[in-house]
Length: 547
Image 1 (cartoon, rainbow, N blue to C red):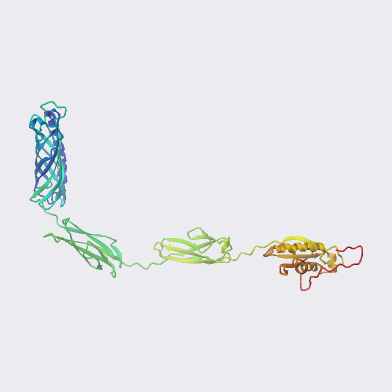
Image 2: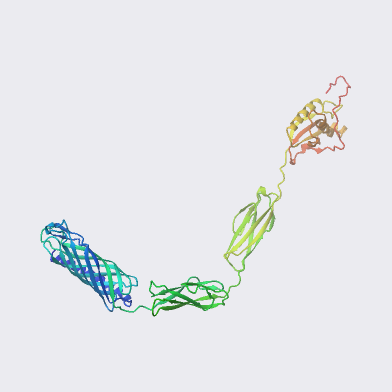
């Protein structure tokens, strides 16, 4: 390595060390009063990765046989920053390939003598540190031209864990060290060595700068501190500057109310029965392991508020409160609310049947057909944001639906014009029709037969009951004389003013007859008109044939 290159590397390394340590010096002002040792002595095992080459392209192997020792003197006014002097020895190393001409491959040795600045964050448990240094390296590879002194510079850091005030365990120390080894014999590799050194061991502390800050505590609320009498108040106490590994004891006092957990870090105060006003709460923390200045007290306050007047729930009125509604029809229902405390309100509706549409203060109710003959109850509820509510009800009567009407079904008719001597007689042609009608009635288990008799005006003038008699005679045949009998309860006789000499037959299904059927005439008074047997035709003239 040329002298110019070595000087450049040294200048750069020194510059970075100065910048880094200036920053650490500025940061250390905040911790200048924190207790820290005046002097630290470290000794322990070390391992080196040389990352360098000797003559004739011999690579220097890792060296696991080593020690490292250092002494750090911390400045009186900047307790975290100190002068560090470090020395390490690495021996019984070898090369690749092995230099068997010496009879062994364990004669490589490296030694460092370094000095610089170290910054350490002192704490009760874990203390990390960083450092930078300059110095010299004594390098003696197994091959080939012997021992050589070289400029060395670098830096690193590590982490200590405190075992006691005087002793710490260095968990890890990692350093980068730049140096060089000139090649007397030809080599294709650089003369620079970029070594990594790892170490671990014991740190002994001597003397102490500064004094420990006094122990203190703080009470923090764990719930609102403005409450009404009867509502609990929670507080927690946290200590500071006590040794982290020590267990603390707690005690609580309150100027009012009952302390429920007097010996814990968190407590609750029962405020039942307290008058409105402010009350002080005090916590005392004690570290039994500390010999002096081992306690701290702190406090807070809570306020019992003046009771509020009792809340007034909303009230509501349903309009209308009663109504009658047919299936399929609709009506609007409203809630009229009274809100004394002027709170936000929510409106809800429910019904025992029917369909509700809409929301809020007004809805529409529509009964179903299945609701006919029943009563629907609609309930309106108004609720404020405190879950206080009021109800009202609407009673809806739904009348029964009228039964569906039926329409008479006309059947064949009988004429009464062939026999002027027996104008009401059921003749043979009419008999055949009645026999067929009786069979049809057997196939209809429900419904009734309406027989409507009529007579011409000329014949009715001679016999006013002729139309009724014709209907009764037909009924008599169907119920008494015919081969197939029809139940008399299923036959109704009627008469109509008409200019026809006929009897019409209508089948009426079960149910009420729809309005608007004048062809059914008027009922026959069966107490005055009775049905007769068909009888024989009179024999008065040969020209007339039997009917």
